Image (cartoon, rainbow over all chains, first blue to last red; front, side, top):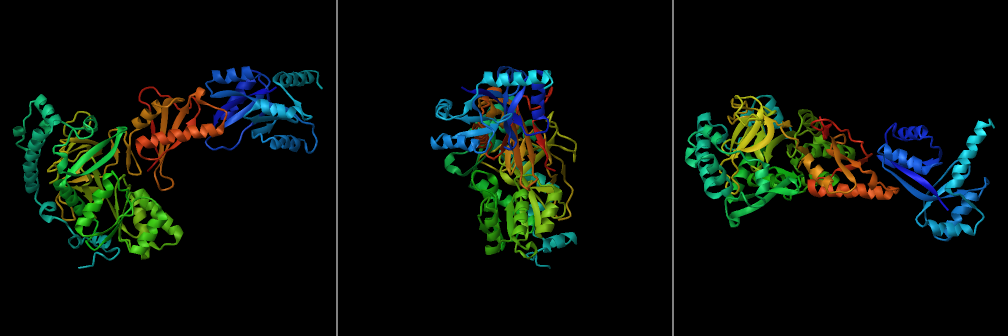
Length: 150
Length: 454
């Protein structure tokens, strides 16, 4: 159980990320989480979106260097110690977290080398793993809420 | 007469027009009448063409095809009957195809970076080494170097002609050579202080770096033993030179030369006309031609410098196209010398760049990129010297399929390109990865190079 993360090669100049996001708006792709950091002249901006296939296609059509990667998605209860607990699970089993970032609400994305092993490790824990369909459904729920004015 | 070994004395003498107090290495040549210079040149040209024709098949074939015999050379103007030589000739005949002598007679080999991986190789016999030393002794004395000087060589040695070329000439003059080699700036400064170096041989950008690092270390350059800077390897702007002179309290001159005809020492700067350099005319026959037609330009006008070494026997190139643009004047100089002077080279009629003393051709970058999967052939080279040292950044366009989600992998990919570029260009550059399509495509001649140095 995993979600598809979209990584884009972006130069460190004003407007380069905005261009990617404008394309998402145009294609009605909704961003549920993202991660960028100060890696120098260029970086890899990672997105979690409702429709990864479409997002990838849109960026590829623009000529961007883009790559999809499976990452874990966890829904954590919003209370102190939850993130520490999850990281503790990985630490105990010597599973290295390559990078991780939070999405909307208390969803977090975690990249590890061996997805299956990490998933197996989490099975024994009380934590909610999310797949792409659930993540997309979350967006749909948001949309219907918005339409109903709630 | 003032003691020229006192710091500042040479510049002061020059400013006051007391040029007779400055040394001239070989007045019988350097101050000879034009008639005498031309008579020497003609006699040597005739010998040189005969030597070349008889010993180098490449030239004999060329001249036969053009219907020219050595006996057709009767005046200096007859040089125009001879074929031109360019870098390609040296590359095609790599390594020894243009040598006119048995390798047993060669006593030294040097090389400069070529445009496609293969370097340009040149050899010298004993006589050539003497000729080279003679050229060096002339130009260093133009700056006021005397036999009692202690010379710190901050050029790299190795295959590059600058290091050993100047080393031998300065040693022949009687100077104490301190072969520091390039790099390790703090150690260089320590050596200047420990050994009492009076002359620093360096690229101007490196001299500026030494100056700045020394200032940070608390060195008072005015009190330093250093008196003279001998520059080479890269063009030096008058502004940079003036700044180094005032901050380090030294006098700096630079010289011109290229590996294909010898190395440093073809011409040198005197303290009377600092933008013009005296050509060692008895050793080099010069022409200035229209780079497009190869025809001579009117006297004193700018064109491409073409050089024929006279009396150089190991590799006797004829009419070497330097691609350097200059103009040459023959009027007697205020310093007392009568040898023709060429204006300092500021531009070229090809796209060669000089980075920290190393010749770099954009085509080398193209060649390297064409061997790497995952990048497009589009690139841009940006050169600056903001930090005092030349810095070259190569913008390389990533192909979408080469992109991975791992920053570590991307950085390793970038460093791999840097390594490959360095192995061909022999000078380090920084690679900057840019997005696919990120390098501007232009119609017609693509501008690959942005040179932000002054």
